[in-house]
Image 1: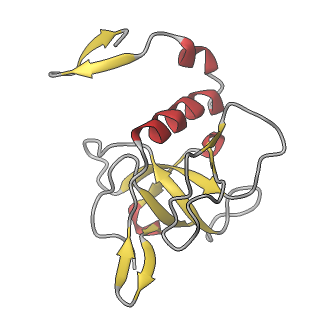
Image 2: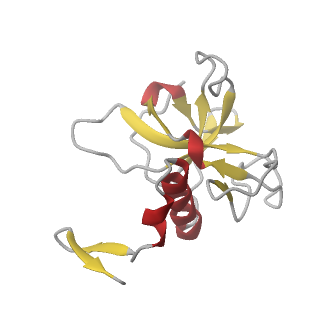
Length: 148
């Protein structure tokens, strides 16, 4: 049963990619939500898949998370966000982690993990030079403030 709410950025959910085809992601796997709710996009969510398979190469778009957020698995189990596979998907594909009869959990990633995934996305889109510039923080009425 899909979620009935719009997830927050940093929320960890389960996504059903089974209707996709190789070489696309095509199985059920955990994801991290990377976008806030945007105007006129109430049914679309931007996500990055999470994997417990270690990468073969050390690449800036494969980000090791500080912990495993899956509620039924050991927190110490290593997992990586595959930031080169960022995608926009329908909310109907998302669900929480089933942890009991009629019980689901939707963990929230740390701010550091979410920031690392966003930087990894920039590298995954081939724009790594943007990740080394000054950090932009939006304060109050979305006025950009550099270097905070």
